[in-house]
Length: 364
Ligand code: NAI
Ligand code: MG
Picture 1 (cartoon, rainbow, N blue to C red):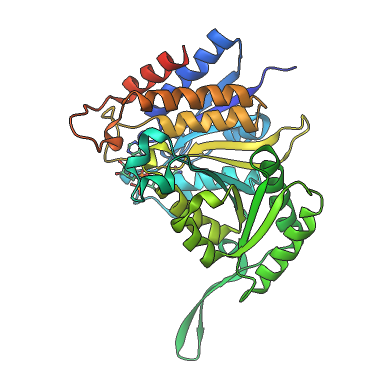
Picture 2 (picture 1 turned 45 degrees about the horizontal axis):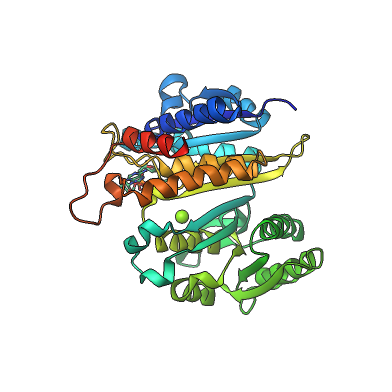
């Protein structure tokens, strides 16, 4: 077995702050569990622009293609707002997703018991919630042609095209079924087959792929009804698979059922590489949080949980991922809170490093 390789791209703003805690966690797994990773670090986003005049160099792109997993912090910030679109920090991230062809975006919505009061929903609606939304990430209406703003007669028309090929639907569906097999063996596919042809095809292809997974209980739901059900009783779901546009909205909505942006990890997976591992990038859902950057206030949990997803989905170390997630859960049970998680009175927030310390102590 070759040593698993990781490329860390900490990025901008709070990216390097939260990634510093993940580096300590990776160190812990090396020291205490004998799990060594071949870790390299490089620049992305504004940091890369400052050093090289581009948000992602070709060398970094090549490294990302060659490693087992990329771990990304966050990109962007007001300093770069005036830059030309072609060199904006976000372009670095988009290039990674596009060239690695990361077509399946995994967004868990998980409620840690200690934070159930933190939700805007009633405690019993969210306590114990653990669902996974698989969003198609590289096709659909954000990419379909024709697109643009044209002039027709004496007014302008804005155009975007929802377009899915059977193979695009099939590969993301297969990914979702595989995931469902590892979880609760329940998959709900969401589209709008009632009003969209792409939805009709989506439903047909997902059903066809489902024949290969007889153990998975497959259901279909119109995406608008799905949005309602997610708010009403989210625990009815296990894995949800949906297209790029609906997935964008549904995953953000589901994420907020459980609380702070500082808690949310994600994974973006592509096709299997020669060693059988999927192309993969792991990153917190949050951005570079310029309002708190440099102040040691950022919650590192989203980034730490993204590493836990890497353990599970890239390195087949599900037990170690469980270990890390349990440590996070234990820390929250003990009442350790970064500032973004404050709700209860009389709790003094810990710093980014303080949260890292607590997670390491819980791991021990
Ligand atoms: P943001 O996610 O950076 O921040 C939104 C709010 O959540 C802020 O009040 C922030 O302080 C708070 N927050 C975010 N992460 C936190 C954490 N770990 N701990 C505690 N509080 C946290 O989104 P915003 O402000 O819209 O964007 C800021 C910059 O980040 C922009 O340049 C944007 O383009 C970029 N961005 C980058 C993303 C990425 O790298 N994937 C995603 C979203 C935004
Ligand atoms: Mg979104």
